[in-house]
Image 1 (cartoon, rainbow, N blue to C red):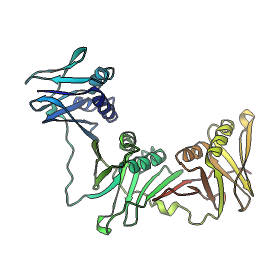
Image 2 (cartoon, rainbow, N blue to C red; image 1 turned 45 degrees about the vertical axis):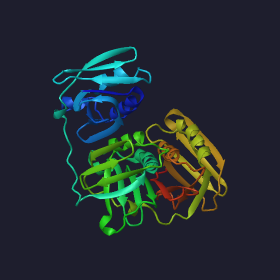
Image 3 (cartoon, helix red, strand yellow; image 1 turned 30 degrees about the horizontal axis):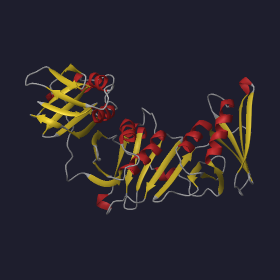
Image 4 (tube, one colour; image 1 turned 45 degrees about the horizontal axis):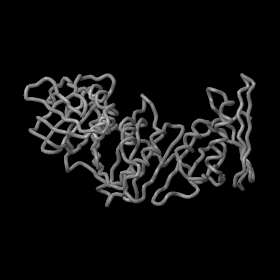
Length: 379
């Protein structure tokens, strides 16, 4: 078996494959990447037993067909410093090594039997749900949401992103109990009730998709899922993974429906001010006291154990009731950093109820909402 491929293209695929592979594996073969050649198509796959990532690239000068597995670390280390040049792989039947030639040298690596590589169950056509979404739109919504997922051993359903497909929209939701993100994608919806469904995408799979989906891509990706498995087929790769099983909490029930006091403020100005006052907050609580009154927003932090205080004022648009509310500053900065609009609205009811943070103008075809639970103030 012999084939030639580009070192640049191979490097890009290997970088994505290595996002899946764990540093410690239950099976030695899971430290490998499988190469499979059929005709002029080279298929590669990597897995951690929960996620299977597959990619394809074209090859030239190919002779024969077959497959082999090679250490992901070894092939990545060998290829990453080779400039953009052709790499010629050759392996004879029953050989235990693969030889790779390039413009100024060569190297050999031991190979493993690809038959030992585990497979994942297939989805029955009769039990799966599907929808189509633009790759860049999927990447954007995962990136905007994954930061709010939890690390909760007692409630594993909170450790992923919830996708809720209805006849009205696709909602992408994450929450750790202290903050919540809900993105509604209005352009993606189920044709009827029989095609509506939901799933919880694990955090690791979400982070892999965030990094390998092309932000600028306008190509479509197909998403197929059932109660246990997910299969995403994009332009340059496909990914199959096990889903988090269980019932996700009713996220709509925790979103206040009437927060009449609305603060409109410049997002980047507020982030900068929070960065300046946060070092003076108590290390354990990170409490920031926010005071709003007509035309003014004030941030106050204090750590009396070390005699530290800080205060900042800024202009805002606000005509509601004068109010103090306590928020965890690090969480607020995280929420604001995952929004893109120049101005945001902070919608308040009273100091004991959740604050809603939304863009002043929603992006076309989207409805973005972020929620943060308040902290107790000792007035």
